[in-house]
Image (tube, rainbow, N blue to C red; front, side):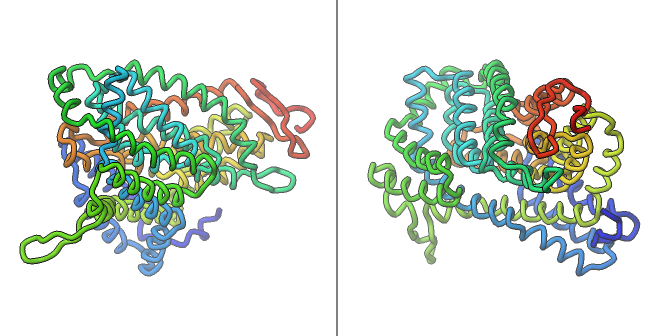
Length: 492
């Protein structure tokens, strides 16, 4: 891409476009060190930094149009839809005492501490593989698993890491995942320029995901005991307070979502079906009153709309607005050429299949590290991974695997990522119901997001050793080159 193809110009340097991200990251880390969290402050400071940067744009209308273009992408509309539905569903689960049901079941089954950590990882891995959405997985299962896990002796910060780890497992493997689709759609065969097919890409990725998942499960269970976070007396009192066997019935709508996700239904359909099923079950079982879904109450001399629906929508609004602004800010980086400059400079060192693949891992991971948005990072790094791979005849399946797994995994571990930020904010919002939940920020648990770290390491080892390396034949066929660091003679 030539420099004059970038539509957004600044006085001084294109790197001015990175200021809103730096303000967001700096504010987030400062609040984390102060053990405080304010979505209002994050939104206000980030938005003001965008406004300040706009004065340095050579063409102000282009700047604001570029920002809005990033905020109105299809992916932004999708997470706005998902977050809103998830807010309602999560509130419904909490009101229906699903956490109490899991506490009751786990306590009589003696599923405590490290075993609950393992259970959380596996449950999230199953749902995320079926739904293809890490966000939906965390926000669907979090309200049930997180408070229950703390009461049953799981370390709260490792538990948060287990939620993210399980969610990343499916997000990087599922055929319906947006990152899988994005990665395959910009890796092309040399001869016919068709993009890599999803089925073949996922099949070739399976071994890496399973190895990383198994290692991660062991590590999480080694780390996950709650220790002295709650005393035995406190845990016993909390179990007695929150235990509710009937709350297990609220697993029915969760099962509906998992089933529909696995059978390939749209995530909007899955969540909507789960919400309506949950309402029927909760009311029918006497877990909530009908007017708890939506109702009216007098506040002073005025009437106020209350209930699960309105509460669920409101609790997600700030997160949605912040992520909209960040997606717009990320689009500024793209259109100003900042991301392109970074990738272009790093792309001059590939000499062999091994060095090309190592560079793919580094480029993809760096794009995830920079902004915390997987699809955006894949869109930027993808064309360069495509060129690097074609030059060394590396099969598009393998290229897509490096691109998807490394970008997405890094997005699930950096403290300023959207995924960790949303989880921390969501867990904090549950304190109004479960006052024993600790104050938590992304810096408290990002190192415990074990599976993303392990998966990046597995892919790096695969690049260095050539484990599973495949080359693209002249007809697009697979030529196995396991541990071979040179292009096969028949296609050289």
